[in-house]
Amino acid sequence: MIHACMPPLDSAVINRAKQLSCSLLLDGAKLLGIALPGGGCLPHSIRAVNPDHKMIGTALTVRTQPGDNRPIHLAIYGAKQPGYVLVIDGHAHEGCAYMGDLMLGACKALDFSGVVINGFIRDMDGVMALGVILCAGILVWVYGAVRNSASRYLWAQATAEDREP
Image 1 (cartoon, rainbow, N blue to C red):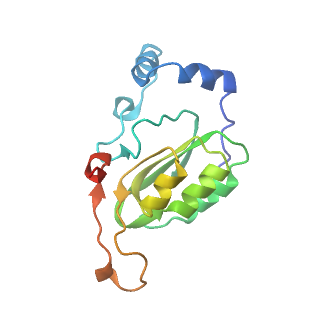
Image 2 (cartoon, helix red, strand yellow):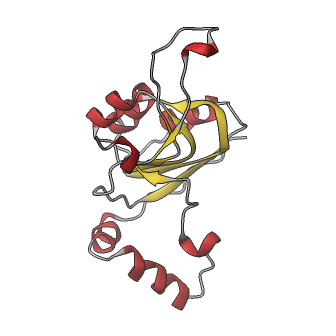
């Protein structure tokens, strides 16, 4: 089922929020009585690909079945306005990647503010070159695509620290 997107936050609100730290925004939400799952914290398995990047915007949420990225395609191309943060619940599925540099390139071209995904991504060289603001459980694709040959892949969860030489 597809639901209509919330209208994006006004640019004045976005610009003001960009001036504040995450801790100030979360403390403000607490003072207003806004209950945030996990206290506003992401699960430890979801990491910033580039910790220097920051994202803020209206969440465009997607819940998908493990291994199914079709709803993600629909959300990317269904967003009618720029500035959304694509937030994907991939159920921490580890059997395949949900996105790579092509889908993240589409997010960049369509002016998404960022992507958060509870699942794996691939094509890290291309993703890093795009400069997309991204938090994810990361899939490191070592050999490249060879269909029907699972032994040719190395699957690993990595963090930004793991990629440093």
